[in-house]
Image (cartoon, rainbow, N blue to C red; front, side):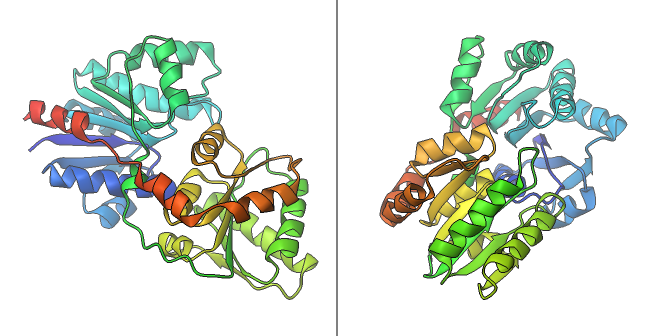
Length: 336
């Protein structure tokens, strides 16, 4: 039985990362792998997925686990960037470096790479990735970035595209998905609330919190703002059964990458709020409208573009994304 370790932003109950992990674990179980996940909450991870888990920052256990594994899988998501935190980038690079030091196979799994603004961190990143057994990235910008520095990488779609969803798309339900971020500001929330009142006032508004510690307080604040502008508007904060609830929307205005991806995959008319380069890349790839964090756009044009989105075209876009496991699987065959 092949021993596989997964390193990523797991255990924080973040919808996108946990969805990626569920897809990855399902595939590894089909390969009959012995799976261990580095997690901030090992008990949650073990109970949720039925695998082994250890604390991400218990470096003694991390080192011992890497010494006794066959393959390290780093990802998915956007781990290898310093826009969120240089500290987190150093941690993920350290895990990769340790696995390489122990002569283990390392897979960079469907990641969005960059931005990496720290020149020293960028140098370490490039040199480590050159030593990995397989590097897969989920967007062309990441591929071009790595190719520029001589890293051999393969372009794949985000693994969440392979998730099975119910494509129901009810009428008169609009979703809003917000997260706390350093560029979040009241002007954006105010313009967004006015936009929703004007264009979606007759809809039920479902406000999605996809990670409690980053989303929930902001979602409640936005709900209060909506009610101060439109006292009779119907709202609900959604924290559970996220995929099915998104599938039941007619519209989605969202920040998080995987909230947008899931909405598109369900054929929901979607608008992105561009807080991060990965969101911008997805919006351009899927040809959906996008609002910047300073909300300088003409919201009439945004609404018109949302209205003109075709469900069949969104579904076709998502269906054309098929995750390629072939190179990934070969590494497990060679390890046996």
